[in-house]
Length: 491
Image 1 (cartoon, rainbow, N blue to C red):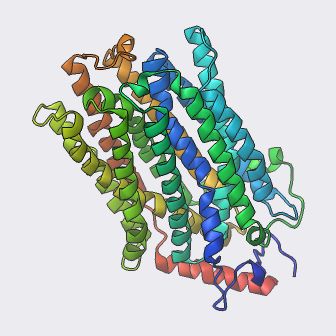
Image 2: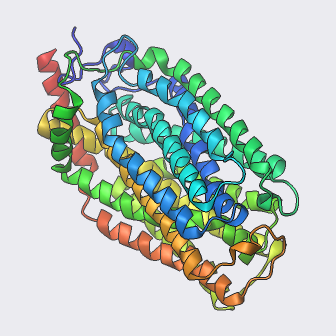
Image 3: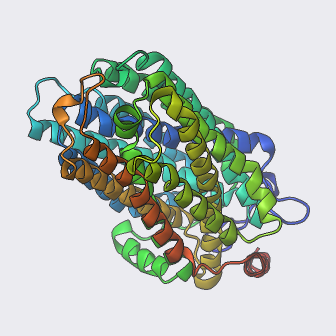
């Protein structure tokens, strides 16, 4: 039986169960989850980039923010091209894996280069190095991640099963992040002032880059047999230059996609600004040592981990939209309470005394984020299936590239906002390398407000944008049944 993009037929060996639902075995989901090390590795090292180039190398916050924003927006613009490319690949190895194999080693090389700029560069040349290295790293990571995420949407077609696959991927990402965080704070940046020492960053960058490429190759090897049996185009498509504009227009005609895209655009802007200012707040406001900073990362990850079993439980009783809304609300509240107390002077613990309060905050942020980050990819897969029902074409790669575009463009904007915030607050760059530097309280109060309540307002705005999303469980079941009838008729 021929496998076509339109028919979407899947051979029984690829995981079609007796009830007609496509479900991969647990071993495939496990190896698939290992591939999350690429995105999680990128995000983990990205947490150090802003601090490294501003506080350690002395580049202005505006220049660092602009470089990150430009590089990520350019990369985000490439995402639809990568998505359309992976949608159209025809090979005996499937349409996703060949693209992923190109992205993995290039991600390793550019990740290492990001943390090894030549010494003695002028501010402009350092800005240019950051721009090119960061942009290249993000672009090559996307060459792996976009087909990887699309593959997760293709591996199953059940309303709940897709959320399970996302949960597996999230757990893989948590494991990778814990490992990288432990290596960062307990090995590469251990000791007082470890984050403020420039010599620590090169070894950190190349070591994590090697870990990332090894994990990517293990994942590809583990999912190979299952993925090659999934649908791929039978006929050679038109050239990308001719088909891509029409595909993008078609994609934005889907109201479900538009809502998810715009909501993530706003939410990721909030998360990007918050993440950019994390280490500045931890080091200068809360006065934490590197070894204790990792505790906050573990609290965040533990909260996300709690969200993994909690999400399926909630989905038994609630719609995905409601679960995501709970996530938005939890994050917004967590970003508000402690920062406002600190900025107003009501409660201002430092060092070890601040750890329990910051950990509780990060736990809540992790729990809320876990609900959002499990629900959104699952909803995007549902939207892609709705798109096939409405327009007769499969666009998983393009849909997930849109999700990636929104996330990365907004994260870049968020980082730029964080950079501008440092300059507007007149944050003293000359003190960046000084351990236990004394900084004016007004600057610290402004820093913690930008880190917390400002990001919370953006989070609430994201929830408002998300409110019109309308694919319910009943709607999805109708769409799935219609597609199965159409595929059976064409088989």
